[in-house]
Length: 458
Image (cartoon, rainbow, N blue to C red; front, top):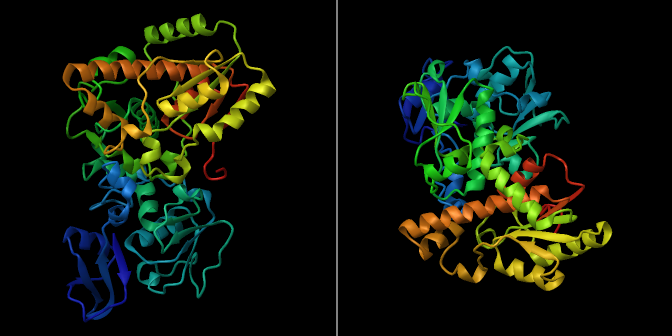
């Protein structure tokens, strides 16, 4: 992205002529800093800003191996209506701009021309890019209208702050142009498919949940999705045995297929984050589903069951977003006791990978009352020099032993999630892939539910 700044002849830079395509021209020439003129009169400077400059200071991003959060958009077409996502900005009646950048100028044009929104800017240089427009207002102070979306000077990702009203121009531009970001310069008119790839770090829950959401998101743009072969830490044989995922179409090729390999770039897009696309039981193979149903009936029969999900271990040790922090067993025990006393459950079904949480729940409610799936569990003390469960798994096993253990862990994980979804009521330690899948599988049938909210509770 280019920042529009005051003309400074003291700074070294290339010379560029002002015009309708000044930003595209700077991108084509790969300019880092340039002085912009019109008829030899100096107007302003353009300074290239790395779209991912904030990630260099994010410990959480580094711990999780993320090198980029945003597409670079070295070329884009603001006139390609088929690929523009204006759904978020359409929610607002006006636009207020705190800082003039390449992206805020482009967004202002889209708002004023395509959506007929009123645009308020304190920087008079906006008239160089948008002149003689009745709905563009140069003001001394932004009005702060109730119906305004605000493009902030500070780096703000609104969806992570719980308020999509305020965004820096980089995340907002990514929201609008993400389809073009995925295409990465390919002819958009020829794109039919999106190949989804996952890093070895990603667990099965996140794979299925993310695949489901990307598929639904891109369907609105006429793009079909499929999973790349051999792209995750799970073998294709195992995925095909237990789950229903689309394979590569026979006519998919480099020309008609875009790639979604850094799916984290979609998680900064409000439209993607706000999608309510529950994962349904149909993502699980029918035979596997039937086995789980039969086992649940054998274990619980007609018992009234409270399902409890506690996510711990690596969630405690890595830097996750504020809205994904998890409650400990100690915090949840009063809520579990409240549910047990008020609604008179016969049994508790506990799903957790955290050995410390398991011990705490057993100690509080007794082993006769609590049921669990037999699976490998971990304690925080196991993670001495390791941040993630998948790294601990690999440290303990290799080769065929690792593959066999991974399949066993995955099968147990889905037994646990489907068991939770079949319970009468549900308590969760917070928002995670497991929580989302349980709610999707249950489809709103829980009699009572409680999900810890770290933004309002402690």
